[in-house]
Length: 424
Image (tube, rainbow, N blue to C red; front, side):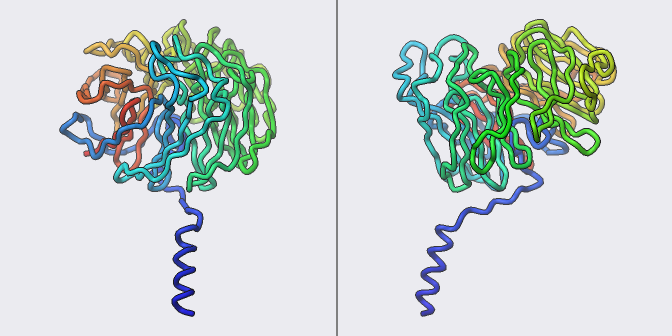
């Protein structure tokens, strides 16, 4: 009897669902807990290289431009293989596999890896801008109920922490030459996705079933991840699209307010601080500040300032009264007064970084900018420009498109060839 009880207890332990609880150090979604790249007082290395401050390095089984996330003692990250490995010989589209991979945060050891082939033949052709980031550009989001991903034309999917596919929902089959890169957002019992490319709408799905709960169709050329903004104890879901910045009720999808925005396609996500929304973007390089909490058209009442400097891809970060961002292709970094929009500095990084797709993070008064193929730059988070370090991983000739994640004094960074844990 005792041996039987012990045996069945062991079987239960092996098969029981993994119970992962949220930790204060989690980085559970794109750009962290508040979607703004702020890592607080985390003590990250200023300098790193192949020989210095690399805790571990894990080869990636396929390409990807998404960012890693951290939940509990695990890292979740997406990648793809089977199709789109080179422009010269992309392969067969039907062979495309999108993967969600789970690894141990402390060691980088693989825990599980799940492939998804839904709608593979509906993927966009691997060429042009899509070849710059591929088919796994959306960052996952996690909570204690599971991990939620968006694969563009492959749809949204929910996985348990054991790696079991719980549901999958295709939002639409449309594609675009720019591809898809925005990430899911969780609000109460909803998964909210910007499906502009695939279906022309922002869509909220039930977390448990994947069934559609609401849809907002007035989305125009928006490639950014919506941001949850706290206003007077309530939340607004804010996103930037061509010509207009909008706020929705995340529970219902009802529009709360809209404001004149940036008249071009928009890739950078908005951020918010103390009820002020900051939006940058487009080829016209524009930055706008709006006070949240209004109703209807707030263009004349809540629009605080506009500046003719911005970024086409990378999102901004806020620190101690200032905004910081990097231009996508010019290699120029900016600092602006968050109250007035006044530019405090506009400096070109040296050596030249080329394109910067990743969004910056700020940690312990330092800014971290990651370029696609010329290393990472560490700057003082100060209205006076000061370059502290330029770090290159000489053994990795891959492309760094993902934004860093931070947890427990470590930075997790991916190229399309390796996943790194960087720490003192």
